[in-house]
Length: 81
Image (cartoon, rainbow, N blue to C red; front, side, top):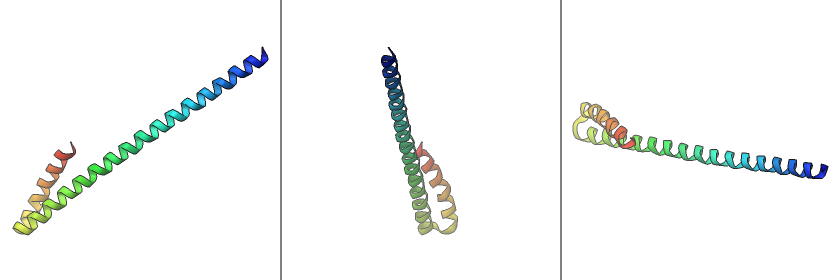
């Protein structure tokens, strides 16, 4: 009887450890994916804004660049959404 109780206790501990390990692994994967998505969105926003400013500066000078910066931010926000 004592051996059976010990075996059950050991099995229970092993199951809990395995479940916790799986949960930790899943959470880690979710966090990594979330970080990758956020970084990718930030890169898209930066590229869109920089391209808009460069194009506007080439076409219309400083005032055009300021306007294009606003437009670029709006476009980037739409892309991210």
